[in-house]
Image (cartoon, rainbow, N blue to C red; front, side, top):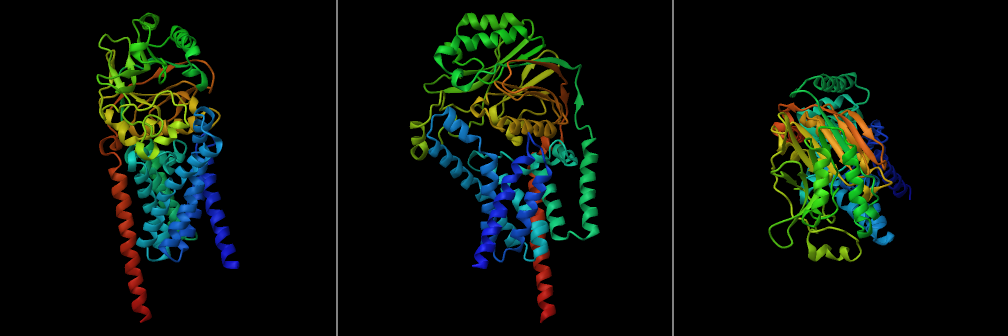
Length: 501
C-alpha cells in the first residue's frame, strides 16, 4: 500500500510539475518554472530502477506538460468548430497522449545510456530529452509548440545561444544546466560551470551577427479584430471588407500589411472594385495582404500572401499546413472529424518549401510566413540570406480567450533571435507586434482592439550561425553528450565492478 501510494504521489508530482511549465511561457514568462519542471523530471527519472519505469515517468510528466500547454485547441474545436465539448476535450487529450510519447522516449533513452545515476541525471536524460523534442518538431510534419528553450527567450542570458544553436540549443544548455545542478547540487565546481555557460550566453547576446541595411522603413500593421464567428459569415462579408479598407486608408507606413485571409474570399471571387480601392488607398506605397488563391487545377487552392501593389503580384503560399485545420492527414482514419467541425476552408495545397522574398523598394526583401509557420525555425531560415525582413500574418481568432497568441508571439521572438532579423506580426485579433533582431517587443497592439500599429523596422543582412547550419549543431552536440554519458557511465560501472571483485 505504501509503495503504491509513493508511486501515485510521484505521478502527481510529475504531472503537476509538467503542467506548471505553462506559466514559464508568455504571457506570464515565469521562466524559472521550466527549471523546476525539468529538475523534477530529471531527478525522478534518474532514480528510476528501470528504463521502462523512467519512460512511464516521462510520459506522465509529458501529459501534464501538453494538457496545460495546448489546452487552447479545445476552443477552436468546440467554441468555433462546433464539436461537442466532450469530443473536443477528448481530441485534445488524445493529442496530449501522443505528444507525451516524446518525453517518454527521451526518458527511456536517457536511462539506457546513463548507467550511473550521475551520468543519467546530469547528461544522458537532458540530452535525450532535447533530442526527442526535436523529433517531436519533425515527425509527421512536426508539432514543436512549447519547446522548452522558447520559455527562456528573450529574457534570460540563454538568448545569446539562439543565433548560434537555435531554440533546441537553448533548450539543451538549459536542460544540461538543470541536470548538473540536480545531480550534484552541493558541488561548487558544478555551479561555476553552469554560471560560466550562462555568462557565455550573455556574451553571445552582445554579438552583432547581422548588420543594418539602409535606413529604417515605416510599417503599418492592421488588426481588424473580427470575431471568428463573423469572419467567414456571408452576411458579414462586405462589412469585413470595409473594415480592412478603412484600416488601410488609415495606415501611414511605407509598407502596409494586412493579416492572414484579410480578404475572406478567393481572389477570383473578390470584387475588382475592392482591390482597386485597396491599391488606391496606399499607392505609391506597398500593400501586403493575406488572401486565399485558387490554383491551375481543380481542388487546388492556397493560403497565400500577395504584394497587391506590385504589377507582377508576387505571391507567397503557405508551405507548412496545419493538420486537421488546413488538410486532413490520413483521410481514411481522421476524415470523420469533419462531420463535427465547421471549417470554412480545408484541403489546402502546400506551397513550395523555398519561395523568393517580396522586393519592396531599394532595400526591403520581405519574407512572409503564415499562421503557425513561425514555430518552425528550420523552415524560416529557408528565406535567408536574401530576406532582410520577416513578417508573420495570422488569424488567431480561432483561439480567442486563450494564451495561444502570446505563446506564438514568443516563438516569433525566437525566430527573430535565430535569424538576426526583425519580425513583423500582422494578425486579425492579436498579437500584432513589431519585434527587433534581439527578440525584443518594440511595439504591440492590444488583443481584440481594432486599429493600425504604426512603427519603424530595420532591414538587416548577413547570416547567423543558425541560419547557415539550422538545427544540426544542436543535434550533433546533443547526440555527442548522450554518447559521452553512455561511455563514461559504463566505464565508471566497470571500474566499480572490478573494485568490488
